[in-house]
Length: 374
Image (cartoon, rainbow, N blue to C red; front, side):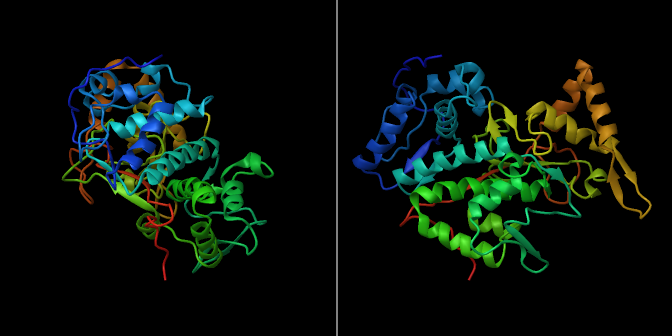
């Protein structure tokens, strides 16, 4: 579907793309990308100091109320077959940002689009075994130490190591055990590293040396590599997602959240209204499916012989199918779970939707803000 030409009117949001410095050359490079993607006609007229943003008509036609989940459907995009369409969805969703997305240069904007594309491709190819108590990696590229975590063997490429650990076809077909949180770290890092091969090999070499010494993970990974956009006091629209986002869905049930690995679900937004399923990659989640699964975790819990809370996935699947077949029950569950989540430690009236999304930091020489420990 070809986008219509929209009138030159003011944008409905204060968001869009904010390219710094604000100079003609930087803007020309961004406009060249928008032209290549066929998106120039969606823009509100440029004004000094104002970011690139959608016109009111384009926003209402494509992302009303900040909802980006149906962009592919409405525009007839095939983001699996055509990477051009994937980039088109990425940039359209970015233009619909509720608050400005700041980029240190046009080069950083172009790199951010490429990283998101890489992340989506990596997430689609990722197939893992779910595990929180035990984990493993390909012995050809990885070694483990309790203090340092899984590190890359000297002389082995970090990009190859990440690919082999997450994509069975790249190696001997074996799947490796991950938690969903660690899985998203590997996928995000792989997407970043592949773009660093092109734009900043020196930074990639530093990250390679880091992973040969000590893995950066959990909170430190977030701080070093990612930007968090949105907050409890300034939440994002609950249906605004950009392909390549790392997304948290919280389990709002106090009891089942005590089961290890079921505190919530970390996923990658793939675009086209779908979220990654690292355990069954050919069955990615819609927002409704993710809401249903997390809601019914409360029905699958049991206490094992050691007194720990565990999850029976078969019961969860049966309950999900039962609710999905009952329109009234489905509407009730989805309405409940589609609320923004409660704060940390609170289990009251909130749903599973987070306030924020996470994406990669700047990576280009001179503007990169990935600072490694030490």
